[in-house]
Image 1 (tube, rainbow, N blue to C red):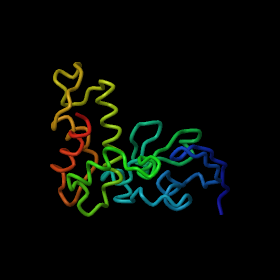
Image 2 (spheres, rainbow, N blue to C red):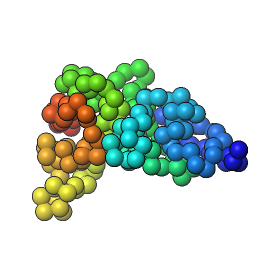
Image 3 (cartoon, rainbow, N blue to C red):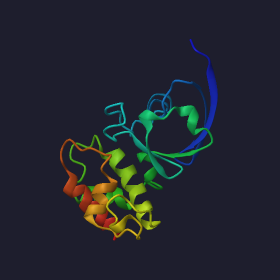
Length: 169
């Protein structure tokens, strides 16, 4: 059995201290060691976005990140988006717009959408922002571009975009 290393980080606002094998991904840490099964294992290759979580407010594919590389960081999973038992505005909008379909990709979509709206609010341009230097404007095109790393096999994309637009407005 390979030696384990101590790891301290904050997950959904709570400090976590664990010992992990250096080969453990953030996804496996969350699901297997911490029991946070909201984050889904999809392709396990960073192609589908089902495992998207927030690290220091930025979205990452947790299947591609080794757990030890996020030592000392703040990690937010879909479980951490709700506050005091109340759904986040995005979670409510996904329900209202029927944007979850089978629900498998939904945790990654919600984490990615949370970060996308924060990026828009901070004025960070995307590949479709006019001239690439101006402040982005909340639009379906901006949302589609920013969410392009998250796949939905049910093809609920129009509902997802509508939910994000409603919350971002």
